[in-house]
Amino acid sequence: MTQALRTVGQNYRDFRITQYLPLEELQSTLIEFTHGPTGARVMHIANEDPENLFALSFQTLPDSSNGVAHILEHTVLCGSRKFPIKDPFFSMTRRSLNTYMNALTGQDFTCYPASSQIEKDFYNLLTVYADAVFYPNLKKQSFLQEGHRLAFSNPQDPSSPLTFQGIVYNEMKGAMNSPDSRLAETLGPHLTPDLTYAHNSGGDPKEIPHLTLEELVDFHQTFYHPSRCLFFFYGNISVTKHLDFLIENVLHGIKKVPQLPPLPRQKRFSSPVYAEGKYPVSSEQSGPRQAMISISWLTAPISEQTDLLALSLIDVILMDSDASFLKKELLQSGLCGQADSSLELEMSEAAFTILCKGCSEESAEALKSLCFKTMETFISHPIAQEKIEAALHQLEFDRMEIGAEGIPFGLTLFFFDPLSQNNME
Image (cartoon, rainbow, N blue to C red; front, side):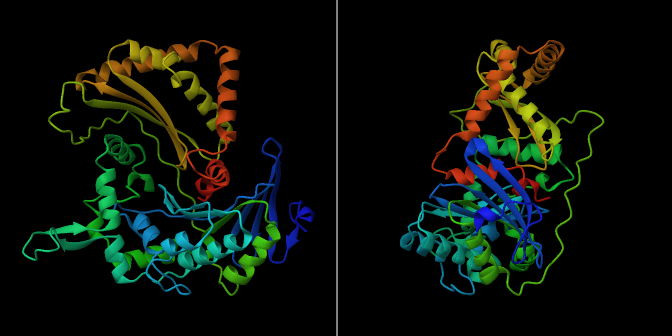
């Protein structure tokens, strides 16, 4: 039956094929469906891989740094309508033959992926996950456990001072101890002040205690609806089995709600923006060259995949190794001890950043001048064809690599796919 579903516009029960794309280099086929009665979207990458994976993905757009998306990701896994136990997530870990289970909060999305090589186990996992995300209990006790609460600093001494506690709260206290995290959260409000990326989606420990249970429930009702979910599948189980499962166990009787409006484009600046932030450092680590200096540009929207591929190639050519065009100049200048770059593709508009570490605060202007002068030289001279081909081959190998840090290959493809969470705007 799967082989017959290969034409755009073709129907299977209440689903309609909106895209059919052979991926020859991956020996796979991408098929995308839309469910007529609810508007839910299904994406399946079909191949012979026995490690089947699903990911239930939602666009989640916080309007503050109170950590609502992150805390909700934790709290939905604390019991649901069909599985009203305290912690079904860890119960599954002990009883399942899964090869991967997780829940992830990004800057503008939340997804719930799991994989297994056993079909029965796969659908058992999907049943628990689907009930968790669409019908969570969201009890106050779970909110206090996962989000924030006041507790005695010494549980054995009721006279000890009260402090804020909570799994996400403590997690983000640890995360924000990282200088790189501090820098990223400082960049957001200045690079994209009008978009959701201006806020800390994981939660700022200073803001998390302001979140209420009512706000958490409202956030769930807004974003966690089958009509607004992307159901992603990967592997060798027939897509018709996935569609049948969704109709019979998830989408039956669901009323359609409108899709979320697209994220607007960030208004571009008429002049450069300068900002300064601080991060904690111990007295043993303090010194004259503890500053980090970054230069960031907001580039193309994520839908412009050709432009982003070109930017990825430029990034490799400019900054991939110590001998690369721009990185070599930065390191040899003596103005910094380390130079790196990143092209942030988990935003509706990609941000390109050059980061220099081991700097003095006074070297900021000199680093900026050197960076711009070197890039102007780069632009004014033709790029050797062999460098372009080498960078292109490197990107190709990176995207085809299987087994990246224990993440299933299907999930790797999900995050690379421009039609996945980044395009849910």
